[in-house]
Image (cartoon, rainbow, N blue to C red; front, top):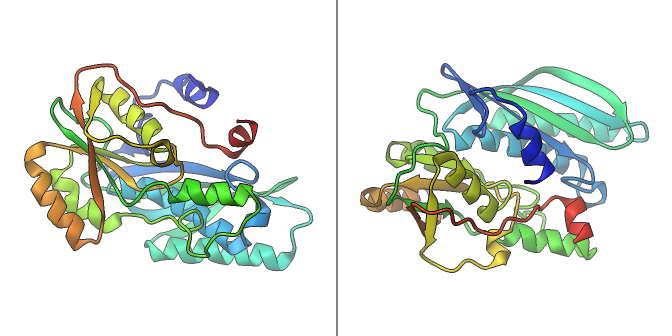
Length: 278
């Protein structure tokens, strides 16, 4: 167990374990976006940093079929950061939140040696999509095309440039697909730590294992920060989900069957410090 998972395991609230904590019809989630852990300042403009920080937080709400309402923002700002960059970062946070119907209502700012953002999202859902719920015989699938984030991240580490519309800069959130597919889904979560790692989390939450239906290369399975969806559902609703996927322009790949075993896919941390050490 890595230290991140170990730390989470020290808390015992019944609300912990999903992309957000569901209390009544409200969903509470929080994500950090820290320089030299999640991004390097040389790679991104302040506006890009802020936009991605907001999107990865909104991804938790999307994954749980929730509508973002309010955001609390905590910023650690380096002393040398110019005022115009701070203004650009703040404007991008506010604009991105607004695109999903949310507004920033407060937070905190402190000085720091690096740029750190921590966002708390308050959302609402009448039918949240949780990690628990899959059954033996169900199918597992992921949305989108995985692997491009890892490819572009590798290029950045080689001091190469990547396209401005790279999914590393701007994740694609599958809000329309999740909303329309919700009646047919038993469980789901966003793919933040890579398909292999997050599939393990989903299986752990249900005490089940898997049987692969297709071989998945590491370039796909270990690509973190994709923010596509991992979903589980009964085989008999596959046709309806494929129709919804087509209507929402969402690639959907079935890759495994849920069975009773303890098989897990190889999981490797994708955080930048670990990658540099690898």
